[in-house]
Image (cartoon, rainbow, N blue to C red; front, side, top):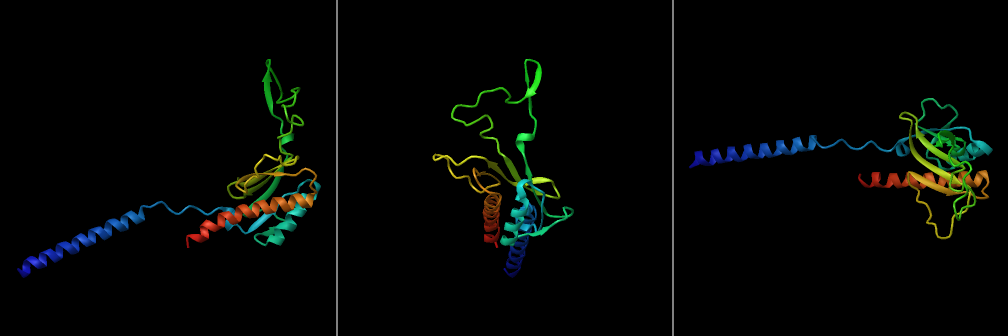
Length: 193
């Protein structure tokens, strides 16, 4: 009878070891944790030159925020903030066998103030310096927000309505939207710990 109990004890111990081994193997095969967004973990940022002194205002508001260290050297930074003018990018279309600028000689859409009503005046992007991938961008629209238009979320892509804004007001709005998005990214990360 004692021999039978010893065999059962050995069997149950073996089963326990197998279960522990399977659990350990399952834990090892889980996907590695996702790399945190560089907006959250980045420290060093470079702001490229922008029209109307916008870059200096953005630098000022970034310093007030205190999240990033601003540098004047673009090499080896974590993030780069840059402005692009989408209207200056020539886009061609084929009309009657001839390449012509897209949208040229076309009447404005009904209800719009002009053919470039929805084109952003400027797009502000935050780029991961290592991967050269955009992490966040805001299209700056030279118009007021319409009454029936929802306020754009501070997500990875947003819009800022900038009719009659000065450079400092625009920079403040850009940094506020970036900060709102970055802090939203931080919350889930800090909630897991």
